[in-house]
Image 1: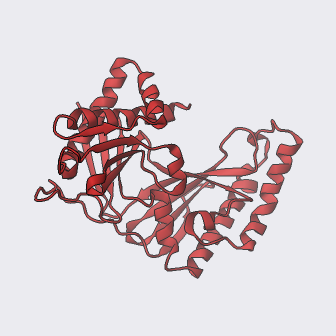
Image 2: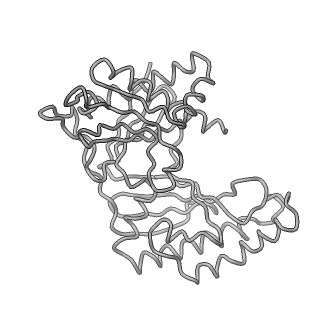
Length: 319
């Protein structure tokens, strides 16, 4: 497993562990020891003690804050109202759920989720290829035949290169940006604009929901000596009171965009498109080849460049 993944999984485990340590003295808590749990524990255990401590201290700082803004974490109705801590399998991400850690009280019909990130902010890694209908998959609206006709010659060329020699490297393609990246990005840009024009009421909103997930969640980003917490409160399920106990801070609902404003290339870039939407959303799509060998598919590294001012963000610095 790549170090990024191992770090991420170790951080998920540290969050689970710290939630348990903090809450089991004041409320009934249980941990679901499923396969993702054992996998994350294995990643955490692979670090030496002082690295484990760093994960735990960071997780602990985030949790202290979450307990303040989510009263239901520490308050149950009764002994039977068990707070269940669970690490989610990676499969869930494919259905649009980006949460890594779930915290559930089934008696209260309540749950919150956390997306745990270790030093990185990418929201999705999605592919483009001749048999991927990104319109259907991301937005619920299929791409046109024109789009597929436009990208076909490029992906066919890549497929032929791979077929003639499996070890062909991307670096062997002359002017790769001009012959591969730019034509694919131009076709993608044109198609996204067309989809938006023909389905103007849904594309902008569906695009953001595809990228940040269809469930409300907190994103906890572990940095160097700090942790950042963002609240993606799209449906208003975060930050609820428990009986007469109110959260110590208010988290506004996040407004989804309702229209696409423009799609332009990032300054001096042949690999990155910037998609601007209303309500203050901007997303970057950077295209790249996922491996060193040529294959007939490309990957997007998708990042949130800017979010609405209603996105609640808190930085906690750690000594």
